[in-house]
Image 1: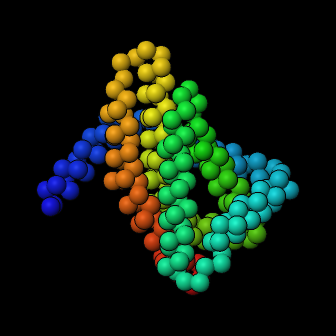
Image 2 (image 1 turned 180 degrees about the horizontal axis):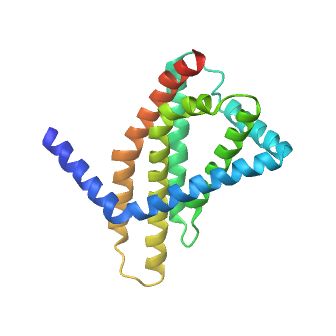
Length: 205
């Protein structure tokens, strides 16, 4: 059993290095660049920042994230929301020539910058913000980048196939779906657990 797990993980590592790594690095760069842009835009336009922050808060409220009765319910809700978002990012890769998965990353980065700017403007210290983000974010962000990288990987290969390049789409689809199931979903589960139990406990204490 352990040997099989090691073999599967070794295959996923090889796939990541060979096919995903460069896309992953580019997405990470643009995520933090857009987060910085969101932060600067919020400082320069506080009214815009307040409206965007309220819209984000309302979005979370509409998903029921503030109305759960237990941490387990919160854990399930967070996992489902994150898993659906990751799957959508993957599926957007089916549309050729449009880097929609990357746009999703950039948009989320910008929103993070807005949230940080607004929270700091309310008098909270940067260390408080980091403590509330790091426990789950250290897992959630990389796996979000990974899912989005799979979407970009799909888009690039489908686009190349349309342009007449020798691409084995069956292998591309198989790699993407397998990696989503083996890597993305388990890590999303871990990130949801950390957010519901660890981050929640830190914030409320």
